[in-house]
Length: 397
Image (cartoon, rainbow, N blue to C red; front, side, top):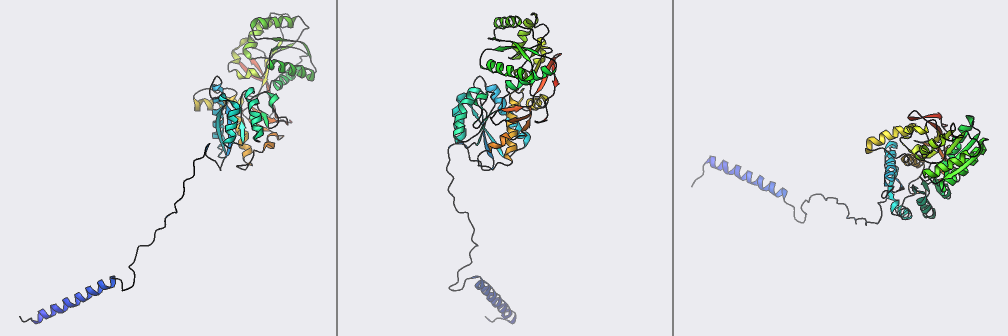
């Protein structure tokens, strides 16, 4: 069949188009001996072996490891938990990111708690609270070169790396006797309980009165029963007159003794003196028998603010002793600014002359490891307590 001129043109166009198509496909194919293009390589991280799980707490290379040893179970769990709460509040208030505190329960064995704290890598121990626990912890910590800041007031355990932060009856008695002497009292008498606290209070009382230039006319002991207290007051009144009488026991015992004292000839007008134990009682002002009594203790001004913040956060009132936990953390945070993580605690910083300031006012540690505090004198008056002799704001002034 003959093909016309139009058909011949069409064939030429088809042939050109086919040649272009073949040429285009050929340009996409690899030449002989040339590998085809591949996608770019993808970098993948080298496989790593997981870190083995080690016993104890995870290592913290950014913060100082500090142990808190307090009773978290048993009969003293309430005050122990209150101290633990206070340390947490202090960390929050100070906004410190350099200190990590781990709690250990001393009710299950104080020495064992200290050993575990040291195995966990803690370089400082705050606590314990009880005197017998402090005696158990001290040698364990000393062997590991870990200092202890105890909340006990047992001065016998102080020294060799153990520091006692508790409120000392000796300092309280010395302060209130000094105030009474400046107020014109020259003749003193004392009622002290039997036992270790009473023995220490007696020694402190005799030394304080002698140092102040006064005279102790009578000093009697009792065993905390009402009959024993009454008998002691009778013996007290059989001796020389006195202008002030120290009742070296808690406020409840003192309030029970005062009515008997007022019925005696010598005790009718005597000024009643108390100790630091009185400050632990929240309703002290309501004990009307103690109206006019003086006692020396740490300031309560900042503590009242702290107690309100504590109650708002934890839904309960703090124990008065919990302020020591708060102040111990403030002390630690201050020293931590110049304490390199992973090294031993710079124990020499604890005995700096200027000391520290906390909720309970200024305090500093002596070379023998006992906290010296700036105390004020309070008077029980009209259902409350008022300050009659303020505490110094710092030492040496």
